[in-house]
Length: 234
Image (cartoon, rainbow, N blue to C red; front, side):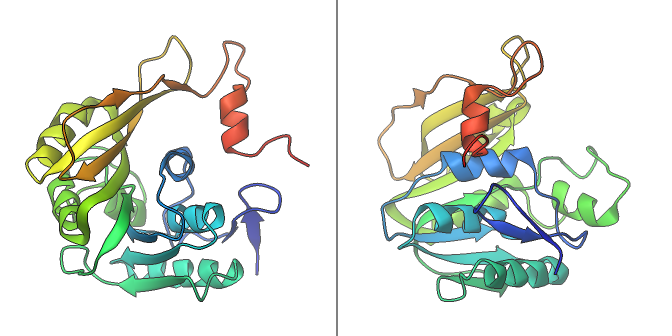
């Protein structure tokens, strides 16, 4: 089996075109999200499983449900679970997230970014995962609110230009934004995406963290980006 490691000795992922490719956004979200030790995770629209696997690597006592509608992506996610020895801690569930039920302490998602009228790719498979054809932001927020008890966390990544829209959808569902971080390619760049942690039935009060800058002015990775990717570690 041909695979690669996100970092040396870290999460392993098979090389395939059957699931959404690993993106910087997913890696950043996997680093940003947090949960109580031994907590339960639900990854909505898991693709190949990178988000849940990254968190299971960080939290050795946690368990996760990986929910995915696309059958080929589910197959890839199951292979990745086995590849990382996570069979006893992770279950891949082929299901429409709008129909999924359960109770979790953390819901995570890298949802489709664009309305069906924009963000087109040449790949039909990638379009299905990037465009809101099978699930909108409201659908994902509905699912998160349903799956969380009071005090549970919903953490996701989304385009910066849709921040206002996202906050409106979240607060209508009692998902209170609590921790926000904008992501920029360089210090002088506009934010491209945001990372947001919400708390179900939480009290108002949003902490805006310093922007995450990925590259220095000379194009090299910043120290924080290198730390997230475990670069330079032996």
